[in-house]
Length: 66
Image (cartoon, rainbow, N blue to C red; front, side):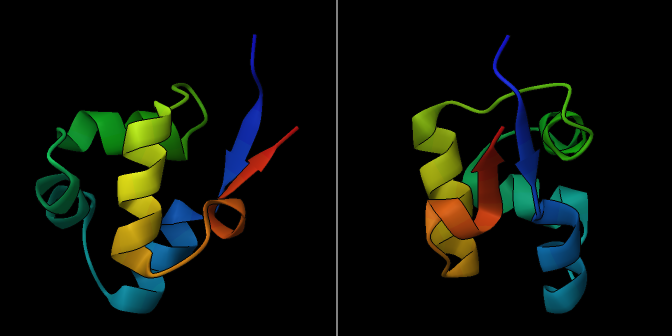
């Protein structure tokens, strides 16, 4: 199984947005964002790219492959 860490929760806090707001911006459910934050779900490359673009970060700044 692929292991990944992410900084989404920290980035959301810095931007002052909820899981729901991020989910709306990247066209997924709040539950998907929650699962990614808790490292229970590894996003597709497309979704990882959308999240990174939203935060104006490189994918490597949001996600860390373990």
